[in-house]
Amino acid sequence: MRREFKEKWIAAKYIAKRYTWTPHLRGIFGQKTAPLQKALWAALYKSDVASVLRYIILGADPGRYSERENMSLLMRAIDMENTAMIEMALMWMEDIKGCDDRGWSVMHYAVSKQQIR
Image 1 (tube, rainbow, N blue to C red):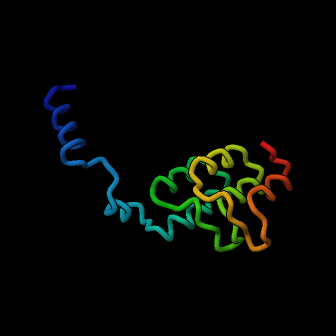
Image 2: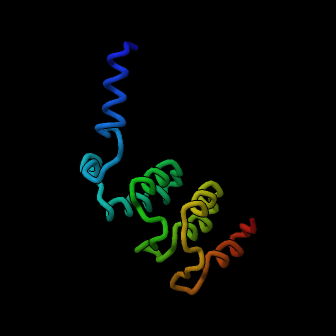
């Protein structure tokens, strides 16, 4: 690479911040917070760990319960017996003590699916 090109790229990245995530870029992806949440759950149902992580990074709340089942991301991952998703949910979840409509906590789901780890 030529030096001039590198200098322009460095200036664009670190001074002008052209390559960093800003709220106006959400329009490029056609996503705002509510659609991001729906996309997060759609990716979870497909067991697409990479997409779930991407939506969390883009601003979806992993602690918000699903409107359809009133389950947290971690509860649903345990229910699906998806170990990779369980590990990721544990890293991103803030409240693991919540309960669903039946009064089941994360521990209830773990025991029912024999996910003792």
